[in-house]
Length: 304
Image 1 (cartoon, rainbow, N blue to C red):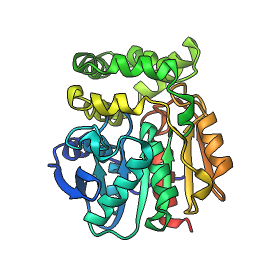
Image 2: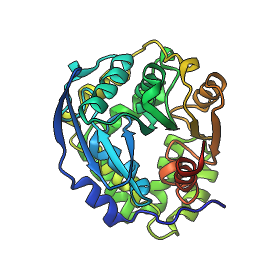
Image 3: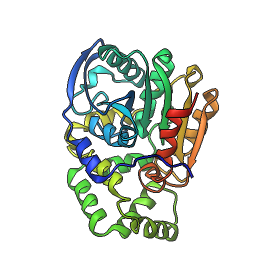
Image 4: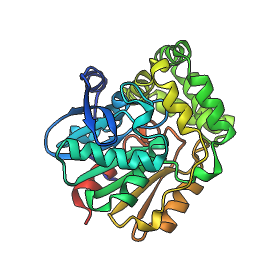
């Protein structure tokens, strides 16, 4: 089993969300971002209904292991206007413009879920700027449009009171809440979800990362425009043009972004590595939280 030296705690996640973002003016338009940590820089690109806060939370395990995390709010989210980049190709260019404004020549990149298309575009269109790329449960087949499950989940999550209710239930009715979430985000039977939820609920602190991710999605009104923009059909990134070392991490039971997305990316990116997690769309933060983040941390450090 691969292990990382340090794993984040609930206190680490709270500190990440307490950071103060700033706006930088780029060639593509205003861009909000926050940063945390010291060392080699990693650009953390959030998923749908995210922002700089979700980006910091997603990469907190990397900060604790010696990296400087730069987390932008993608166009349409929080303080970054949609005009900075409506299409995913434009978002890739805007991220490159952000690097210019921050005077960063080359950087590692990690992207999660709905942040996948922008990260793939960045790597395909500005390859010399990206030293290594990690995609976690990431969308790449954008021409297929959003799945019914993804749309329904986004609509349900797009209300603060529902998110707050789920966070409360995770703390006070952990096993049944995890069972419901696992079935919603993964291809589990009711029995399998219940059994896995029981194991996870018995592990101290296991839900802290998931709770923080949900908390970093609150303030829905300031994220809705970006989320709606994410759920549009667009031309997929030219994956064949990506030449940097690429690690694709995906849950085998992911029902929100099906494993076909990972298979497709792996097939079209020369030399890419595909790492399967035994779990749902929540696996990186929940079912596989003791193994997958550690693998990513080691991969950033050791891969060539």
